[in-house]
Length: 219
Image: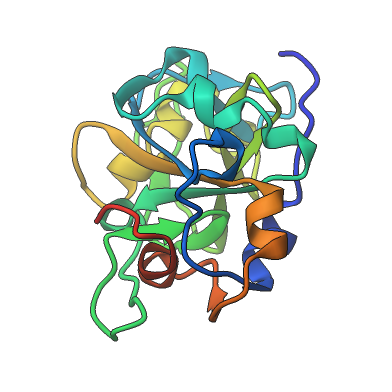
């Protein structure tokens, strides 16, 4: 995997920024980019650290918008937010107090009922070890051409099984909560000129409902 230039998603997500209505000029640098895409839950590579499964956007299926257009200046100071279908990871409340469609990444959830084991040494998980205290973070990184979605475990798969696929298949988002047959994500890129200069309401960028209202984004 190539070296990834990563914008600080945690810092950006936690910040409260001064935002306003979208600029309506033809200058695309002042447009908010939105791209919806999905991954096949099996389409990941396990890293050398034995803790990380990575999905590369080159393998994503775009359903609306363009990842290439959205990422064209992503590594140059733009605000880059990646949201996941909240049904795949947790119950999230939006600004109105109702459940939100999209949950902001990065996020971490714990597993206390996942069972792995390989008592006979055949490389296949046979369910003889109960996992407690397993934390899994869903994260992302990007540059001007690339975007990666990472599933990062607090424990190496080798602690439970010699079959890396058996381990990560149990903690990727769609399997984690018995969701759909795809990992659905939404990329929102706000050019730095727009979020630095526009006056308006201060919003929590982790709350998709608030971002949607500020910029007229889709549901």
